[in-house]
Length: 321
Image (cartoon, one colour):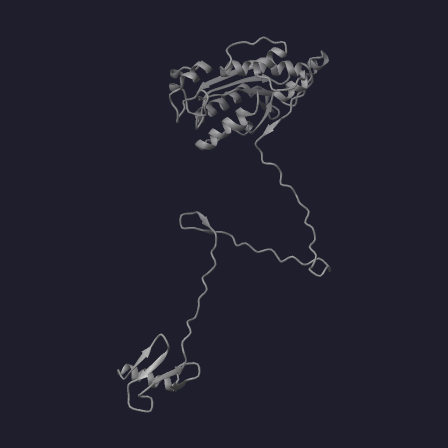
């Protein structure tokens, strides 16, 4: 089919078997921001990558958890009724249902090889901001195909030119198509985006991924040799510190090894004969020790009775004033 389209001048062969066009609607208030913002309509349209034909569509209303009651502004803007979200599913179930629908809709195309598909949006908000934030905020795992997408604004400008930002309705009309359905109805927006995608493909633009959540590759910086302070040969760098593996905690977790505390051996003053004599005199109640100065007041008969005596433990010597 792709070769036939190319022969008729209707575009060129694409690298993807299918395109999945999504356009989420979310909780909102007038002239303000709502936190956390939550998806309330989850639509998707499956487009054949060779013919541009719409193959299937999907929609689920999603029940918001943090702001369950829609504002009047939100209901009027999107056309979503309160009973639609009250009877909806949570985001995790909507993702599961969408994935099951997508696998069933593409089952016949991947008999001999893996199906190649790409998510298509009008702008980066749907995948980079809205779905990514809510899944992280609520701890929900999403399919990996939502981590890379085609922002149709990029190939639209390649096909039709023109500067500045245009909205989806303006882009559809600029491509010579009529707008169908209600603006800001998620499924109608996705269907019009799918029709615009097919028209851009027909004009010969090859679709490539324009946005991704994958982290950029680390920049390899070449280390400059260091010179010694005297201007000689490069100074040797110290060897790297060997990191010890983490220990496993009693509950199965891990924690870093802590350095063992340094055991300090308490120094004991040397026992000298003179010191022993004075200690025995103190024990017998014949003297007193001034702890502030280290002086011993002798209270026994002898040559030191009327003064103070000091002892020096390092030398084992007694002296008097």
